[in-house]
Image 1 (tube, rainbow, N blue to C red):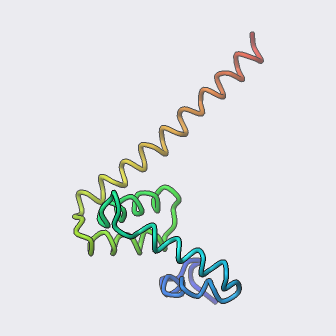
Image 2 (cartoon, rainbow, N blue to C red; image 1 turned 135 degrees about the vertical axis):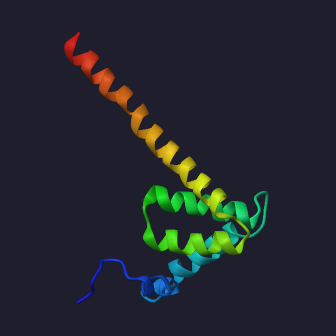
Length: 111
């Protein structure tokens, strides 16, 4: 029996997702690889975005992968933490702005 739901070694099996659906898996990896090619954003910037998103969606595999990738692409600890704070601010703000929905409901129900 596994000790945890997520196992570090499973990150290395990411490429195996094509096993049960090769055509769609290959399409995903083609798209994925194209996304991370240099473009208007540098590979370092893309890695920092990916790291921030990984924290926002709380994917331990992605956090592991993009921590390593960001370091390899030249990001430092301060930049990585700043990216995570950007994600946290957006995620927190998104929760708070939905408070308007609650406020609208209260006004509709009590006025």
